[in-house]
Image (cartoon, rainbow, N blue to C red):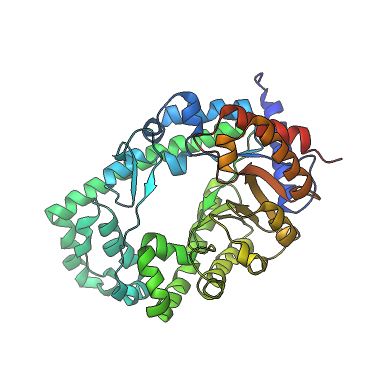
Length: 420
């Protein structure tokens, strides 16, 4: 594509922003918008390994820039915040993932490791002081760098002349070494974030809006993913119901506040919320009504009340709870479905939320361009009817996707996605 003047790129940016805003409002734009989101497909197209994408900030930026300029999406999910983590994770000695170059071959995507970082008998400690628990229990267990901080006292109980007595902990050799290691990780994280911010500005200058500006999590997933692990939290539903419910209520305002601050810093409104444990295969509808949806809805409402737009990614089928998740203010959210049928979702939710997704990973990997075009045509005509639809791969473009299929998806929305 020829290089656009700054004025031309700004006009294109505003055109795309308007297109995206209208579908969130459940209105018809000039055509169905299409997003670019992928962890590593751009790396594959650029001929670099996944490890290079995670460790080399310039190589990652070049790879994303290349495919974005070719495909011309209406929004871009910059992968820096989820991919360019290798150097910082390495310094921290983070135990929650394995990634290419650290436990996995260079050409594999990173993997979540299900572990328990909070014991079943520690709910009261968490509820009493979540920040103290996070600093002196979770971080020392989840990373090597923070491990010596497990001996720090509960700061809030030490004031006035007692301050020198807890200050002594920071003079101990292993704690001092830990702080130096944490500072090293912080310097690397700042380096990455500065490059990420510069790349976000570059995308905007080229005419591409960002498809997310902050991230958040469901309260149940906060504990299931990061603290109790899958087995622990499933047992807690039966053995520690009241403690789990109390702890989830405790984190709701913190999750909302963090997302609001992050969105303000990044100058946008879209808050990405990936959901894991609330889908059909992991809990019953009754459990969903008790342990998942009420708390998630409070987080979403907190974001909405602050003028933000929850971008909720349902990772797995949630067909049995469509009527439940429809209980949200109209035209305030985006529901991004990985496995649920988008045609059924349109019937159940099309008058309530903007829908996103639709193109399965299997089709992008094993299908043909003609199959992609026909599927996208149907999506535009049915799911896109009357607005409220963003076309995207159902879980981002998989790295194994055929280039001709990805191109067919982007061309199809231009051929079939226009409104009269």
